Length: 220
Ligand SMILES: Cc1cc2nc3c(=O)[nH]c(=O)nc-3n(C[C@H](O)[C@H](O)[C@H](O)COP(=O)(O)OP(=O)(O)OC[C@H]3O[C@@H](n4cnc5c(N)ncnc54)[C@H](O)[C@@H]3O)c2cc1C
Image 1: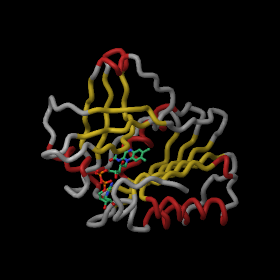
Image 2: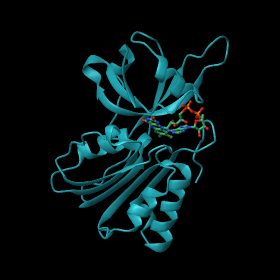
Image 3: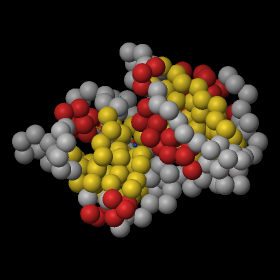
C-alpha cells in the first residue's frame, strides 16, 4: 500500500461528515490514452490545510490506478471528484463488526477512529503479509484479527469468510460493515442475511473490486 497526500484549494471547502467517504481519482496515463477514474477512500482529511490522504493498494501494473500509484512522484497532478457516501456510524449501537481486505483498510481505520468509547468493535482484515498490518486507533475497545493472503490477493483466499464464520460474534445489537473483493463480500452478505438472519438495515456490504474485472461496479 502506498499513501498519497493530496493538496488543493478546493479541499478547503469540501464537506465530509462520515468515515469511509471516497473520491473518484482520475490518474494520468501514458500517451493519449483517455484518463480513467477509480474510487479511493479518504483516509485522513485536513480541510484547514486543504489536504487529504489516500491509500492505494499496489496490485501490479494491470490497472491504471495501481500502475500510476506504483510509479508516481511528489508534485504530480491528479483530478479528484466527489465525495461519495461513507458509513453513517450509529452511535447508539454497542457492537460493530468490520470486515474487509486491504482495499477496505483505509475505511476500517477511519470508522474505528470515530467510534465512541462505549462501543465495542470486532475487526477482521486480510492483507498480504504481516508487514502490511497497520496500527488501528480507536476510543472503542477493539478486537483485531489480521489474516494473510501470502501470494494470493487479499480478499480472494476464502480466509476472511472462514474466520468470520468460525467465531461467536455479538450479532445482537450489532452493525456489520463488509467491503473488499466482490465475491467475498457477496458470500458474507448472504451468510449474514440468510444464515444469521441479520436485519438488512444492520448490514452495510459493498464490493470494492472484483478479481479479473477492470473498473468493477458493485450492483448488488
Ligand atoms: C467506495 C470504494 C472505495 C475504495 N477505496 C479504496 C482504497 O482506499 N484503496 C484501494 O487501494 N482501493 C480502494 N477501492 C478499490 C479500487 O477502486 C479498485 O481496486 C480499483 O479496481 C483499482 O483500479 P485499478 O485501475 O488499479 O485496477 P482496474 O483497472 O480496476 O482493474 C485491473 C485488474 O486489476 C485487478 N484489481 C483491481 N483491484 C485489485 C486489488 N486491490 N487487488 C488485486 N487485484 C486488483 C482487477 O481484478 C483487474 O483484473 C475502493 C473501491 C470503492 C468502490
